[in-house]
Amino acid sequence: MKQILPLFLILALTVSCQEDYIGQYPVDSIPPSQVYNAVVENYPGRVVITYDLPDDTDLLYVKAVYTDAHGQRNEVRASNFKNKLEIRGFAKSDRQSVDLISVDRSQNESEPLRVEIEPMDSPIYAIRESLDVSPSWGGFILSWDNPEKEQIFVYVMKPGEDGDTIFQTIISSDPNGFAAVRGLPAEEQEFKVLIRDIYENYTDTLSAVITPMYEIFISPEYFVLTALATDMNWHKSRNNVGALFDGVKTSDKPIYMETKVKVNDIYYSYFTVDLGDLYKLSRVKFWGRVKYCYALHCPKHFQMWGTASAEAAADPDNWDGWEMLLDGWSYKPSGYETADVTAEDQEYANNGEEVEIPETAAPLRYFRFVCLETWTQSNSLNLNEMEFYGGEFNAQ
Image 1 (tube, helix red, strand yellow):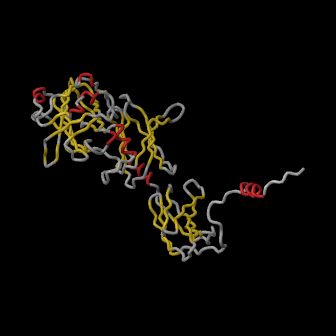
Image 2 (image 1 turned 60 degrees about the vertical axis):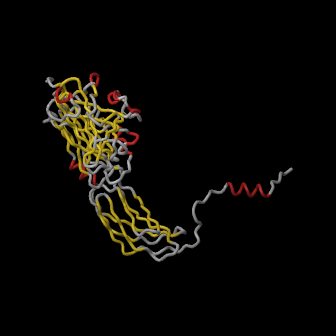
């Protein structure tokens, strides 16, 4: 005996077996008109094409079809609300054709309007030309110019018998690029550096033979924070000043200092550390309140001072016998134009701000950190951690 399925079940099965269509069903087969009056502007690694839109009421978008830096056909689209599009990711300068095609809501395509483009070399090649590698304390310094603020990956590689291995990767879009490679012995060694952009374009490799300067991490075992100057005090909720040297760099309970002292209507504060011995400093690292980096009470403008004289350091209000080591500003990779904090900014803050002490600076035992201005011009100062590097003065 035959089984008869209900009509509604047959209809449901029929519909469920059909593929879903996403988008508007075609309503005509008439292609739109071409764009016209196209103008090409060539830039490093990219082009901008402006044009006039056709007078088609059902125009949906305009697409540019081109060959990318890796020989693949690709396309970029711009909606019908715009009269320009941008194509990025080119490597070396090369003249080629781009087809501009109008597409309507029925997915009809116009005849292509062919335009010639000749983008300049990608910014990574100028960055590579500006790349400088110089020996430093316990490693070496990389610096480069990136005026286009192109996001780049800098690969530091160590040659070996089995080929080059990546030793460190730096991600940056800073116009004045800077990075330090540390923790290396003071002996001659070779490194290679190359640069990549987000479009998988690579520069050639820079080879450098480096001999880092001798450096040690100065143990905080014998560090002592001396008395504060007049009208400066540790906040009662953050008076565990020993936490400044406990190795915990990202705690949300930093030391918290308050001051009533003003210069030119801006509060400033300072504290002094007895390092316990005489050292020739090479660099200093410090961490603000990383949960609020580049904000609140984190230092923005600061100075570092030093002296070898116990007599000069005995009075916290005294400045006679002190030498200014440097005057510096907090480094924000994304720049100072806005208060926004990027992922790159946060990563840099998490790794600690680092400043090199000039080689001309005299040996010291007492170190003074002066905050001339916080990011909010507050009357307080937050610091999570501080580290010192260099060598004992009598070290060879």
